[in-house]
Image (cartoon, rainbow, N blue to C red; front, side, top):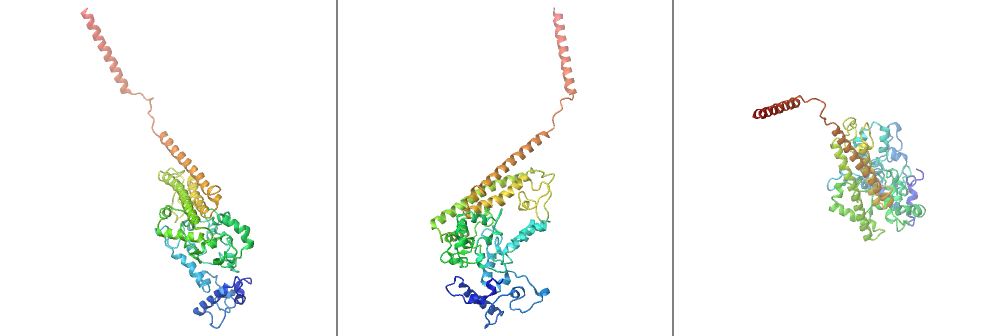
Length: 443
């Protein structure tokens, strides 16, 4: 805290205009105005410090009873002073998808806690300590220190890619890896860490901060030349590609957001290059989605036909309130008996890991992240395994059905046929006798 801006606002007020942090003086005036209007700061009283008690007890408090009054500040508490930033962040909740591809406000930081606790498998998991791993990232809805860590609350920290890395990494949120392995990321690693000035506001990153490549924040905070804490104003594909998105990319809602991305990219690139690359990324994502959807149809058909391994003998239902579903999201976090079966788990990895890595690798310009190491190559591997399993399961079912057909027992004597045969023989002999006798009489 002693190293934070909060600890010494007088030093901020006295910054020379030549200091890249001088913009904070206007921010301080804005904060004081907010507090005056709220009646939390006397009009003739300058704000000199934000101490522990201001956040953990109440702004302007002198003493508190720790047993009764101590609070853990949430996003709204930060909004008491940082009103504009709070409003910007909360405005993510207003996003509405044109064809209801996602619920209002989703996916976004502003509703990420709701997205977590309202997820059926999260609620159903008896392993609560494991489920806390979800909680450790899905709390941005309530807090601000996921990006600028308490108690320094450094904007310079929050402007660097590593600030995003705790949550935006791994199998299905692998933006950090894709950024770092792109040319943008290697520029940050080789030059940015030592030469870029992260105290400079994002709008001045190139002109005054010395940036030679974008960061996560520089692209995702920007919208039509303005920078804010609403990070979903250009969202198009969302968390994961779906047919409902792919089939509607020509809708004005999606087209307008694509144009906004072109504007962002042209901060560094030509417009023709930006349009061409975004078109390529869309097409490549759709190609990956097609593979996943083909595999999905196979999994759903196996489930419908009752052919999944153990489906009729060893398939416990997932814990309530989760519902059984072939290749469902819950099968990444829960397993019992043959639920999921092997082929379902392969498919779950395919749509929730491989396809997402493919899509995010393309859009973050990490070639190996979507063509070979991850993404497309992994999609091909899982597709081949699913096709093999489909053939094996269906051939096995046909063999079992054929083996169950009753076989006629030829060892039993057919007395009706035997009697008919004897009658036919006797009759033949009798007729032969009559013919023989007739010839004898003629002679």
